[in-house]
Amino acid sequence: MNTVHSLPSYLDPNHLGPWGIYLQQVDRVTPYLGHLARWVETLKRPKRAMIVDVPIELDNGTVAHFEGYRVQHNLSRGPGKGGVRFHQDVTLSEVMALSAWMSVKNAAVNLPYGGAKGGIRVDPKTLSKGELERLTRRYTSEIGVIIGPSKDIPAPDMNTNEQVMAWMMDTYSMNVGATATGVVTGKPIALGGSLGRREATGRGVFTVAQEAAQRIQLELKGSRVAVQGLGNVGGVAAQLFAQAGCRVVAVQDHAGTVFNEAGLNIDALLAHVSTHGSVKGFAPAQTLGNDQFWSVPCDILVPAALEQQITVDNAGQIQARLVIEGANGPTTPQADDILAERGILVVPDVIANAGGVTVSYFEWVQDFSSFFWSEDEINARLVRLMREAFAAVWQTAEQHKVSLRTATFIIACTRILQARELRGLYP
Image 1 (spheres, rainbow, N blue to C red):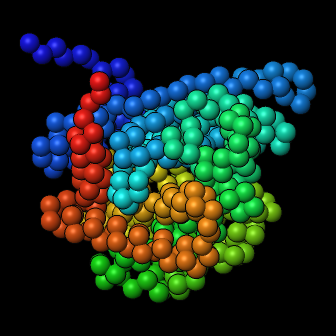
Image 2: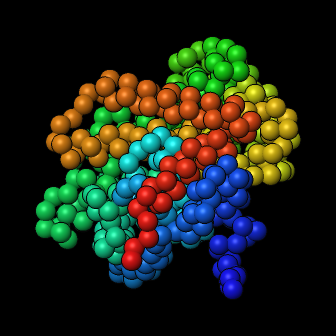
């Protein structure tokens, strides 16, 4: 007799949150997995989830405690790979979902990695540089037992950067007694980082936008683009769109929305953000209400900020022909359906923003071999891999008459579960 065990709330597909969205995506792909569907529960359960206390001494002498996470979703195809974010709203559900999307992303681009993700619930803007270093080093020590160049390789994510990766690499290296450059990616060039890594995710977003636009006969030059988020992903993508002759007509960040029908000067806007901390107050531009951003007439919309930005509440307002997901999980499944019904093509996060982890893979390979490539070589390899991966997704979508998201999941989940089946269960 089979015993049915109820799922804990964070594994419940009806539970609100990023993990629930991921579970719904897995359910949508299951009918296309054939005999591998026998293993589908593998995708619905993280292999390992670590919650750690991160105490540090603040500059004023008091001790503060922060909650940190490292989740390894699946390691069947190789070591875990995924970023570490510092944000005040980080939750276990979010990190679990992000780790699972990394499993899918790595498999979709056919990188020899599993999926992992990490984070600390903290607003880094409230910490001094010294406090941030102590936080990073303590967190790295706490998760040190499960990371390593052949076990799990962290990388930058929201509010983390090359300096944070340098501290993580140094801490891990001191604890193991040898310099281990391959334990993280996204490092400074002087410590084994890769040329082109900082721009890689935005370059990947632009590359798949080119490929998608070509397939729907959308002329890129002169097209109107709206970008949500002007950080490492959205900022680079916006620059590349502008360089290609597109008009970036609207940009939204955490503080506001700016609009110019003739096109925003992206270099000037990035300089404004660098000085003032946000797009707010940029001229010449019209200020819009944040809700108005979603109804801006455009050809290409790039959500490159946080999860769950396109929902049932605003999906009906979007006027774009293409949505290119620069962020992880920006569109809910219900909003996905609305966009599909309205004929708006969505290029999903798990392929659209895979440029960063692809160049992270290049960095990891270069660290192992101690042989480094030129930036032109890096960019050429990145564009070739992204184009090949997108072509495979497009072909699968046409074959099964499904969305690009489901097609990407078909390819990725098949690869993950094939590895799971071939490896078998031990003991």
